[in-house]
Amino acid sequence: QVQLVESGGGSVQAGGSLRLSCTASGRTFSDYPMGWFRQAPGKEREFVAATRWSTRWSGGNTYYADSVKGRFTIFRENAKNTVYLQMNSLKPEDTAIYHCAARGAYSLSMRPGDYAYWGQGTQVTINS
Image 1 (cartoon, one colour):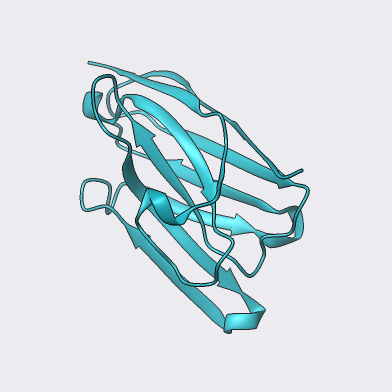
Image 2 (cartoon, rainbow, N blue to C red):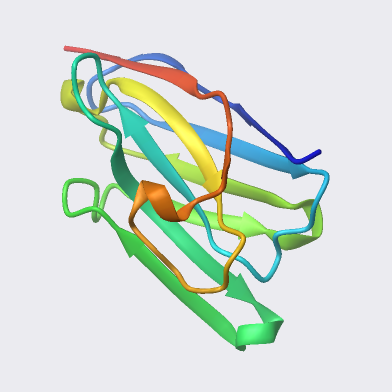
């Protein structure tokens, strides 16, 4: 059974930083896209960042939502089956539940429906 478990959420002041982690078990995702999505109260789940990076692809690709470009960095440690989201210069509008996701197909995607595996989410709250 595949499981994705997030950690690292919390509450910080605007301008602060947090690092989220997501570790997968039950399957290796080293050659497959992994990403982060978020959902704020009353809003739809939205794409944050995704990456596909391994020796199979001689590197890889990374996508970011425009709202987080320059502030967030996604990276992964394939040996640990783990993906991270480093979040800097946080804003109150970044407040949401952040979910990790992994694809069962090789192509990188920003669409939630393309990801088959999801974590339960971790709460991120940014105070103004």
